[in-house]
Length: 106
Image 1 (tube, one colour):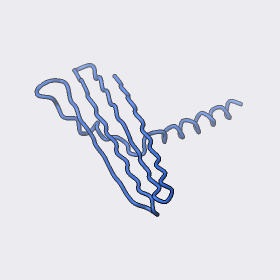
Image 2 (cartoon, rainbow, N blue to C red; image 1 turned 60 degrees about the horizontal axis):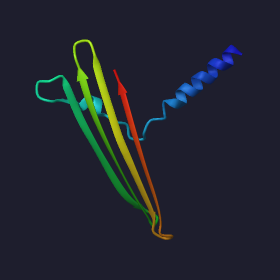
Image 3 (tube, one colour; image 1 turned 30 degrees about the vertical axis):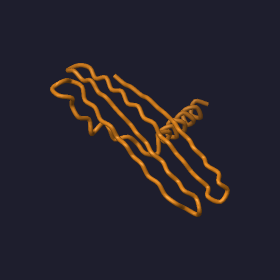
Image 4 (cartoon, one colour; image 1 turned 135 degrees about the vertical axis):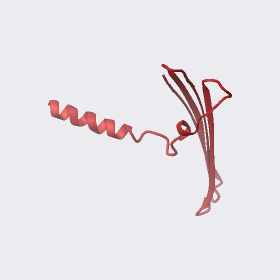
């Protein structure tokens, strides 16, 4: 029974690793300091579009992050929004989705 529980835990843990957005943020490696302070920030904007089999597709994503670091402590906050739009030109049907997330760590 114990081996089964460990196996289930491992499978769930591995699958949750893929629960991120399809386009991962790379803000952490691009933080820029604000003047001579301990505060750093970054913004990432991504957009794309396309046409496939009489359907138009567009999406965009924006992410912003701010980091406050001292000798002992670091506080990081990141937030983002993602937008999808798919338009079927044959049936004039439009699908729109929007999602928002925020995360922080210290």
